[in-house]
Image (cartoon, rainbow, N blue to C red):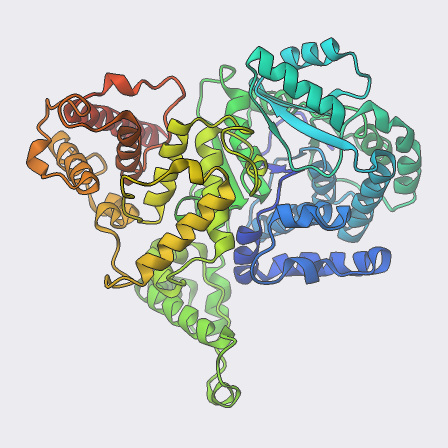
Length: 621
């Protein structure tokens, strides 16, 4: 099919390793029935080949996270990632999204080809299973992958230095991140050399050493198997970051997929090519926001115009599913034409015209959503009495449109549990840390030592823990708090969950927001887009005074925080982080110098400047 000109739709990106978020997946599946429908197509294949149904693993509470899936049989995590990408694609297309190009990252290229119609969902699952078993037979669990904070050229030099034929560049994500694959002992050597050269690194949650020359022997058998499956014409162009070109009509997809075993993924090059072709909107169809974070970095220094990057089955600020906001953004840009509201009208009020129902929903949609959520909560409660349940009217399964969820955050919060479960806490904290540090989420395994293994120094840990605490509205901790007792993300999640339980058990009403961080989203909506300088200073002073238990009047504009008020640098990092999170400001770069902001006056100037830049960026967008 023709690929010379970009179409009027977004580029859909399908992730590979790491592209699964259990919390987001379960939440999206409750609201979008087509997600389960996709996995029910995969179930007969896994039942036949593996003796188990994939839905039995994924659709359960509490949500199963990727780290747990990786402890299961290798095919489970691979098909979870594959199916999640297809499910996100189906939700998007059901809302009228018509992509211009499909792009897959490693395993995601199989997902992209199935989404484009080259194979059925079932045959795509068979391809994933064959790929997994072929690699498992050769790798035998001895392979590993590591992300280096280095360019592809520097990483290739490091590989050449070690002179190990089994060590290779697997993916080139952007100019400051390259992934290597190889035997575990070779990866250990990479770490030792990287430490000496001052190159940051992180182990990846990967079952095997993908994209490695040692896999050449399994490629012919895999290609022969795939050639036996029915290959259909592509309905949407598919661009391969591995071959560096579009798939062509009539070519053997089986042979190209076999090339994946040994060739690297040049994701950054693919993004730059598509941008140069005129593509400006990139949407990740899959779990987490793995590729979403890579696109801007791939274009850094290579593009000076605006690019929109969105994700689907991942959670963002406030632990909210990003999918509704993504659909709303695509509709606003004219890239999605269907919002789901008409389906609600046909179910509830078919006698009304679409315009009449739209007016009704604008007035009463929040109330309807709140009622349905409350009734569903009762309906799903395992503790409800069977007899009383039989007497209850059956709740009406109303699919709530995306804009209603965006417009009614208070209703959503009111119907949600006051205490998030442990899996949700861990997932949220992991996302906050990954975003601030610009690390892949998968490196934050529960047991990974933040400083010893991931290189996160104590000052940065204070800032990140403060951001996570502010996210949940937790008060500042006492001065005898020992950061060293919480050296892993697992322990930090335990700490936050315990503090949330304590907070819920206090005399403060459960629905009363913490005064220091009272509903920042609502505050930002109600307040002017840019608060004036005096308001910023007053807010920051109140935050500092409350956390330190000082009278507000001691925080004069010129008072030196450390020399005069005795606030040490670690505490200053925490307080500045709380103030920044209150205003929704992103984490600052690694070259930020706290010593340049030794008074509250300078801190207010800093926040005021950053708010101004944030407003300017949102206006220009």
